[in-house]
Length: 131
Image: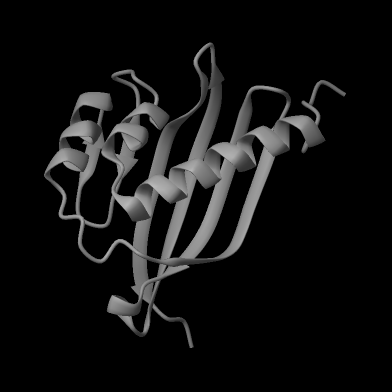
């Protein structure tokens, strides 16, 4: 089969560590780390709950302007799947105490670069809690 190996243990551990670093930076509003973990390219994309950002510069600009208030959250059902040695998808649900009755969803596409794992694309949305 030409399909890449799925969930190679060493690769999965690397992406899990990068994902955890991103999450720590997110709730601490560590903008420098968040900027570093996004692919520094015009092709990077972040679809947020109220914005569509194209390119690293736009994503970094959003981070710099965002309020650091109410970023704490708890994650649920995080699934990280790696494909081969250089590509992964991370999906998670999240909850914030400031958004009772709502649930957030986040997906990230991670790629290995010479500098380490970076997010090439991300999508964040918040919906009413399903019945």
